[in-house]
Length: 229
Image (tube, rainbow, N blue to C red; front, side):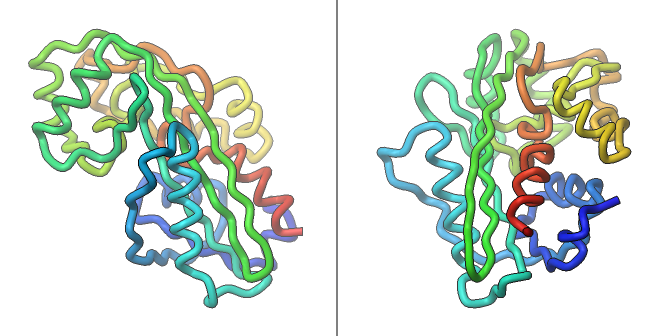
């Protein structure tokens, strides 16, 4: 059952991401989908989690003047950080290939920034996850790009498509949270069937799996509970 304060609020999800939409629905939270055209450039001096925090605040700020105390916009942004630079969404197949070659055999960090904003208050936070990639062969990279066309994904991949078959991707904290909200199967249900081929790009994830998907639902749920008081 949802907290009582959620029922009295109106939520707007400011995201075109189908993964964020499905995750928020899975929590049982009713929301309206509304996005604004926002310039997603950011100052060159920003590093790591400062980038998605800057961008999610910008996305939420676009709703200024349209909110009241009980209308809350949820905005998020996800980046991949590796070797001291950011990987956003690839523009095309060649850029996706370059990104996956760099990720191959390496560890990278995924940062998601989330901003909650109403007419009277605003809070933003970020979550970090460490992701370790297997060594990828050229033919595996080409197959993945042609099959999944990951052009709407930071770093040109989705963990839900890239994990070994049979994996339970959630962290221990996420498993406890999913039990508490009555959705213990949610992590498994998000996985795609592509791993049935035996190909897996991700070796392991340390931290929040849902963060890599683009919305750290455990942390967001807790923050939203306090925000709606």
